[in-house]
Amino acid sequence: MDRPLIISGPCSAESEVQMISTAKLLAATGRVHLLRAGIWKPRTRPGQYEGAGSEGLKWLISAKKETGLPVATEVANAAHVEACLEAGVDVLWVGARTTVNPFSVQEVADALKGVNIPVLVKNPVNPDLELWIGALERLNRAGITKLAAIHRGFSSFEKGPFRNAPMWDMAIELKTRFPELDIICDPSHIAGERALIPFIAQKALDLDMAGLMIESHIEPSVALSDAKQQVT
Ligand code: PEP
Ligand code: MN
Image 1 (tube, rainbow, N blue to C red):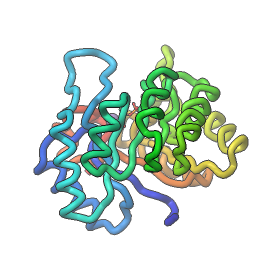
Image 2 (image 1 turned 180 degrees about the vertical axis):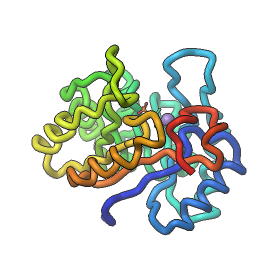
Image 3 (image 1 turned 180 degrees about the horizontal axis):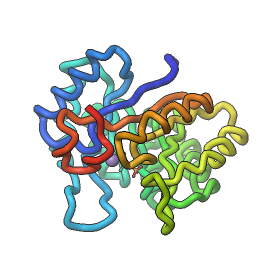
C-alpha cells in the first residue's frame, strides 16, 4: 500500500455535479487514493441534511467513471450494503454511531457474507476499545479480511479544543494489540474545524498511522453537512 493512504471527498454527496467536480480536483492532486462521500447521513439531531440516499450512489459511480478513483461510502444496515454492492462501491465504512451498536454491526457483517470488500471501521463515539475491536471482529468472522480502523476521536460532555477528543492512547493501544491492523486517522471529525486539521494530521503521521481521511468540498462554507471542517 502506498503510504500514507489518502481518502478524501465531501462529508455528504450533494449532487452529481458536486461529486464529479470534487473528484476531478482530488484526482488532479495525484495524492488521493480513494474518494469518499456519505449518502446516508447519521445526524445526531433530526431536521438536518440526512443525505441523498440511494440516488447518491449513482453520483459516486459517475465520479469514479470520470476520474478512475475508487469510491467509498458509509453503511449502517443490510439495505445500505446491498445497494452499495449492486452499484459497485469499492470500499465501505462503518460510522462511529454504528460501531457502538453490535446489532447493527452484525447486520452489516451478515449482509457482507461471501463478499470480501474492504471495510473501514470508525471508532465508536464513546472511548470503548472493546466495542471498536468487537466491530472489527464481527466483520472478520463474516469473512472480511481487508479491514482497517479509522480513528475519528471521541465525544464527551466536556468541550475541549476539538469536536471529538483524539485520545491518541486508544489508537496506540489498538495498534499494540493488533500490530497488523492499519489505522487511518480522520482529522476532520476530530478537529471539527478546518484550521486545526493540519495539526491533527501531522500528529497522526508522526504516530505512523497508515493514512488520513480528510473531508473536502468544492465550496466548504455552503456544505450541507460538516461545513466548518471541510477543506477545498
Ligand atoms: C462521516 O464520515 O461523515 C461521518 C458521519 O463520520 P463519523 O461516523 O465519524 O461521525
Ligand atoms: Mn462528516
